Length: 440
Image (cartoon, rainbow, N blue to C red; front, side):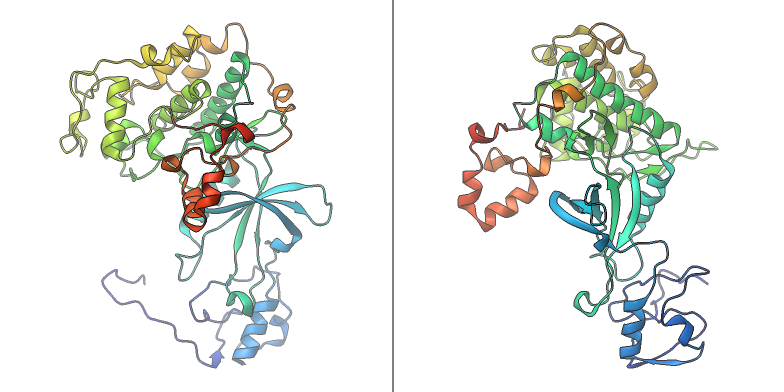
């Protein structure tokens, strides 16, 4: 019977001797770290020698855990870490190579376990389940899940890694470098692949919910991959007129659509298409087009670009929870084309941006209609990216791009500045590296 949320849950206090009852795994050690359970047919070295009702000493229990065989989860030591290429609230990402072949390069994403007293994070389980479902050229490919050995040095807590095919760049890193220049045909190819990826995941009833340039990976051969499905979830259209109740605390603020900022919890694929529009504009501006510091400021910036948010342009918006609680600018005219024309010279591109950055999600272009837009079917046609990328042998990731101005540092650079202010100031020279400030 499940525990009632009001009832105290039993606490497990390990003693020096542990009674092994009906399962081969001992109870959680101090701190309650989850050690997994054997699958049928998989036995550890200790399993055969332990009878069902035998008693283990602490040392025997520790040896049992150390020797435990995860039949379908290889040790992370099969890969050698080369460099750290990403960091965020999700944890860390490393570039690594296979020790056996010395050629196969992978990306290892560490599963953040710090907040878990026991068990495996439900968010990571959801991400793994979704990645196992999605197999497409424009979606990052999950190869396997690896784990570290549980030993005394890590207090018998296993660390897990998601292992992916390696991609040489992310879009934010490429756009940060002024030496990387995209032609119109190449921009079309980027957006075509991005929308193909969205069309595929939405057809499989998955929302990404964290569309941003840093989560768009590009290989050296020019293949784009949607990445970081840590906030992704399956969706369904509400049945029997009962609305969905998804969390609206998703999507990085600068790419967050107006419906989420106004508290909508019954949303769908249009939340990802708003992000796609923001990324598309960024292909020309080279930096995020709306950089608010708060939800209120973000809504103000959206209103100044896309016009005032009113029931006239967006029927039913007044029923959203935060509509009356936020200060929404009045008498703002829509200026998407006008503001972006100095950057985006192509009229078809301007028109597609105008259709993606629509306030009312029900009127926003979906991935199918966007892919059929004249932007992709007029000269110059979408063209291969590999020739342009071949000129840049160094990997480019947002994490590795130096911050431009102290006031606009990314979180990991802010930490470095606190530790070493002199070094932080030294990185602000844009001439040496070719990187530029990503503030629009």
